[in-house]
Image (cartoon, rainbow, N blue to C red; front, side, top):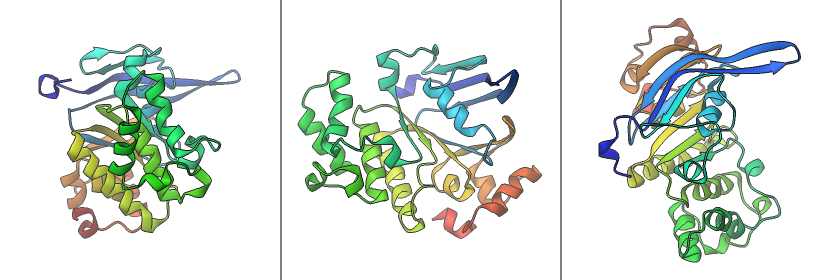
Length: 261
């Protein structure tokens, strides 16, 4: 895929997602629109229940939109995604322990997507993927419970990238980790973005995390877009909405100096 020929890698237009709860309909996302350029890391932030993870799952084809459209590389995608669609876009979940099969070794976890998509040179690809996230061959035949939380998330990232997707969807990828490990994973994601020219969407409740990784940020409240700003405005404290300022104050450990590093 030649990124320079694509206007927007991801285009979300008028997205609505509604869930049923008995006889009630709950609008989790309402009329949301934004675009993500090739090679950009786009952040979506908000408190619990703001709809941010629902947006990510709708883009991934994991929940059905009730309204609007989602286009990937200029092509509107259906809810039922093809194998080629899924190879183009991979997901990293919040809990690496829950997203890895407890009875599969790391080698098996990395080999599975290659087998599903019929890719050859599996051993080379596995070795390259594990090295790229800072692990070694000694981890191949360990099980998830034998790894630390940070190591498990590195494996989850390796599994997502082993198919060489142009798009990475990140759902709170550091929130389940110790604070001392979070920076390591954020720095790894930043390096992978530069090396692979990845387009990413990062969901987080923490403005410090999105300030570290993202170019632009959408702030959601109650499933609606409250504010769209670039990271320079965030670092400078130029926040127009009171809700965004509240999120900033609630982000533990956030400082302009830390975010600029």
